[in-house]
Length: 264
Ligand code: ADP
Image (tube, rainbow, N blue to C red; front, top):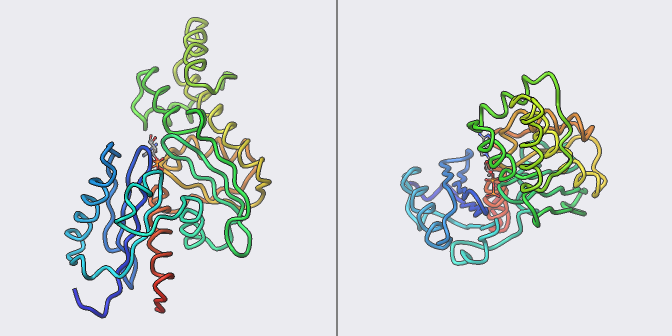
């Protein structure tokens, strides 16, 4: 790789999935997503090496790196650690400068961030329970015998959405068992569960006073049923960036580039 190309690394070491990308002058050169393992430092090294190989670059070609996600402090030798709030906000605004907020829904937490002219102004976080996270939907899909894609499709196809009041995974599971016994169909339950998760996240958005156009990021933004239900219950104008799971890693790489003083 020629030395005239400036390359930056963004790593987003999430609780469930770890993402990395290399940013070059013309855009993203390579990206990788893998399941998070307990050896976060080792994983960061593997992702970095995999990205170098995929992009055909050497370690010495990379001019700067930022690491975000819950594992960022453990992998601080891979780059400058910065919060997910900062990195998701930066990545979202790159895709759409008009958004006034970011709602990030990952494997085990959800966040709502209100943006001001200079970046994040306020945020609300749900990291104490699985409600309104990818984990909640995964557990419930498994309980009903659905693969993730089929679970979302079933939710969208259902004619009725039973109210599921518990967003605690354990209580919701027993509520689902009761509703099955009452003859509620699996597709209707899928709809009720997506709606319950969407309501929970909409509460977070309300806590920080979001209104207008917001970006939905994180792996759960790939779930079309969740996106549709969230838009409906929150009343927000939802923008899903291309590859929403990589928004944090993109933001990290962009910040690495900006901090290096690089001018395109
Ligand atoms: P984290 O950064 O918290 O580890 P991510 O933002 O990477 O989480 O999102 C991981 C979650 O996204 C997982 O819980 C997974 O279920 C969900 N997810 C990933 N891909 C899809 C998909 N195609 N459809 C629905 N959900 C998805």
